[in-house]
Image 1 (cartoon, helix red, strand yellow):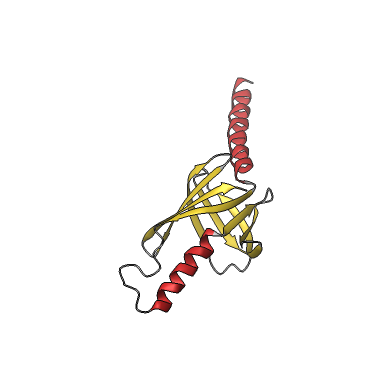
Image 2: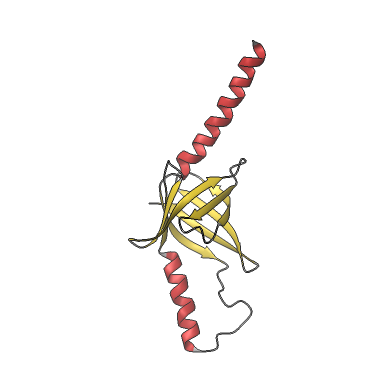
Length: 138
C-alpha cells in the first residue's frame, strides 16, 4: 500500500509540473527581440537590395507572434496574419519545444531558456548560428 501511495504521489507531482509548463506556454506570445540574426553570415552585403532584404527579414521577425493552445496546436503569425499552423510537443524534461507545421515540410526544435508568466526565451540553431528569440506575453 505504501508503494502504491508513493508511486501515485510521484506521478501526480510530475504531472502537475508538466501542467504548469503547459499553462505558462499556452497563450499568445509577441516577439520583442532577436539575437544573432545574420542571414548572410560572414559576407558583406553585395547590393543595397541585399541590405534591404535583411532589414525586412529582421523587421518581419520582430512582428512575429505565436499562439500555443491547450490541445498542443499552435499558430505562428506576423502581425495579425496567421502564416503557419501546426502542432507542438515538449520533451520529457520540458526544456525542448518541437513545432511541426501542418505541411510537415520542416520540424523546428527550440530550447526553452526561460518560461515565466510574462517571458519566453527560445534558442535554435540555424545555419550554425544560435538564434535567440525573446517573447513577451500578449
